[in-house]
Image (tube, rainbow, N blue to C red; front, top):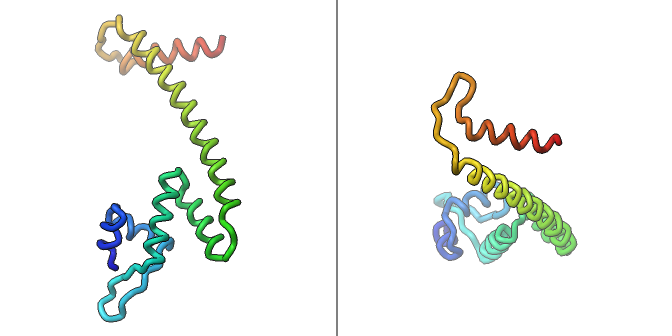
Length: 142
């Protein structure tokens, strides 16, 4: 099947198929007659795997490692377990960072609710942010 057919079958854009082909994760055969690339059932399975791995949070680099293990005839499972632990830790850290950001944003909204709008001065662009950051920094050093 050709690029568009594979893309439609798996519900992705043709550009997605081309991207994974360009970086070497898919290896279609190329017609000598017209130069079209053809994707067989193995390429279809590989793309399905890539999409599933991406949905689980694996990076392209992770997927490249996993596929390389499988291509070498080795079990990719230990690599998958190690990488998912790493990705889970990173996701938990981003989640905690987002919670801290949400807390700061809520505090800013609460603080700014009763303040008036002011025009910028030579030293300030928007006093709401600048004063809020100064208060926050001051409270961290105490």
